Length: 113
Length: 112
Image (cartoon, rainbow over all chains, first blue to last red; front, side, top):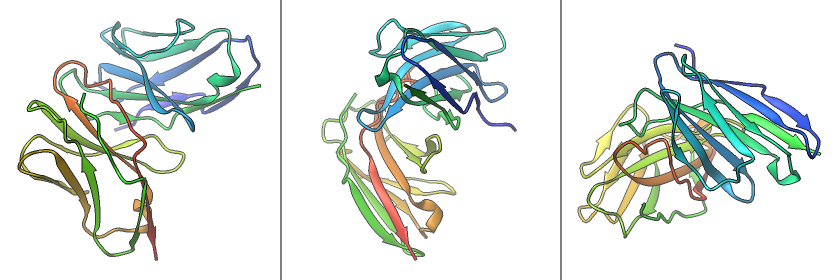
C-alpha cells in the first residue's frame, strides 16, 4: 500500500509569491491534515479536511488555505509569502474521523527568499 | 488538551531498553496518550497509544500509571534506527483527532 505522497518535495520561492502544495493520502483514507514545522515553533496544526469539508483549523492567518477533492487528495496554498513561511509542510491522512493514528508524508520543504 | 512534559534529551545504548518518560498530570479521564516519533528529515510516525491499560505492539510498550498522570514508552531493544525525536501527546477522542498538539519531544540518541 502506497504511503502519503507529497509534492513537490523541495521548492524555493521569493517573498510575495504564492505556493501550492499537494498531498495524496493513503488509498481509502478520507481525512487529510496539514502541519507546519519550523525550528522555532515545532510542529503546528494548520487544518484538516474530511469529505471535502474543512473540519478543524489551526491558528494561522488567512494567507494559508486548503481544499480537498472528491478523491481525497488535498492541496494547501500560501499566498503573499513571507520569510517566516519557510518551513517543512507535512500532510497526514487517516481512514476516518475517530482514530488518532495519523500517517504522515515526507513533507514539502519550502524556502522563501 | 492536557499538557505534557518530557525530558529534552536522553541517550541509550544499542541493544538496551529505552524508557521514555512523559508527565501529563492534568490529564482528563477521556484523554488518550499517544506516542509518535520523528526521524530526522522524515514525517512523524505513529508508535502506540493507550487510555488506561498498558499496551504493547511490535514497536514498543506503553506503561500508564494507575492515576494516569504519567506514562513510559519502552523500546525493548533499541537500535541505531531508533534515534529520533519522540513526542508524547494527550488527546480527547472524537472527530478532532487530526489536530494533534506536538510539544518539543525527547531527542533520543542510540549509541553503538
